[in-house]
Image 1 (cartoon, rainbow, N blue to C red):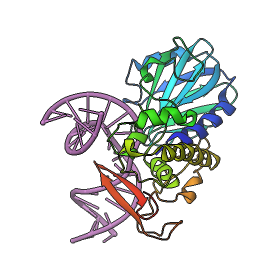
Image 2: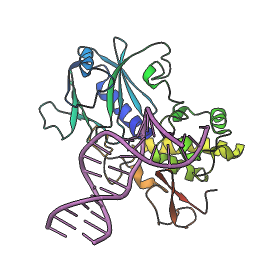
Image 3: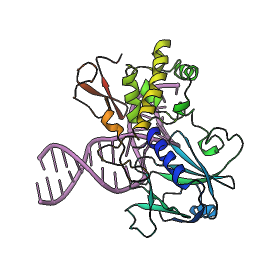
Image 4: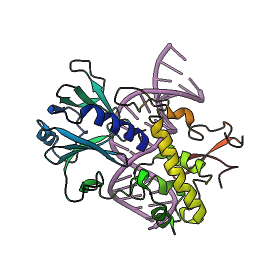
Length: 278
DNA sequence: CGATTATCCTGTGCGC
DNA sequence: TGCGCACAGGATAATC
């Protein structure tokens, strides 16, 4: 399940391989992959040179030399894979981008929740994605989080902290796995009302957001048992070995030894230690 | 605002 | 060994 660390890992690899290369051809075969506009619009990118690869939250922003932006979201099962032209495509390959010199970029997505669309940049482009109106509702990127903003975003909120952390309008980039890991690192219960955190707890939470996400990026993201996250080269991430709570229901807390529990709220679950998270 | 439910979808892994 | 089904959850919308 790609969240910020996985998307950031992919962003770096995409930039490394494809920036400066010319897009020769685009073929979209997925019926649902481009759904905000006519899939044929992707054809407008043919002949352009990729100038940068940005990221806002879990959205990838591939910018071209005429100002267009190809926006991509992997959702649950999307993958972007480099491939040699002529090699056998994986099942569920929905789009293929053929580049000069460096081969193909393939969009593979079994569950078809992922999407691609072309946007026009408009206005402020200092922060990647901010000039794309389709994702204007996103809060600040979780890696750019400021303590003052976090404090104001949580103030007065009765919703569970975890619900706020995974709300992309509040903060962009955090999903189910890292919300649990961040709450554990901050020693804060995920089911606490967001507005109940003290100033010191907000500060610690802010630190944990940065620490957990940075460590996960260093570990090239998390690949769970379903292996749905793969990097550009088809490799699994490494950070799952460092998960402290996610998926560890019943196993001992690495801090205090108490069994990790799984608590439900709404239709979603959270993993936490009932002894050292307050 | 918040809580809840549903929708999209396929691979996996469990119980029987 | 095989079948059926619950489950996984990111984003969004609808309803109360």
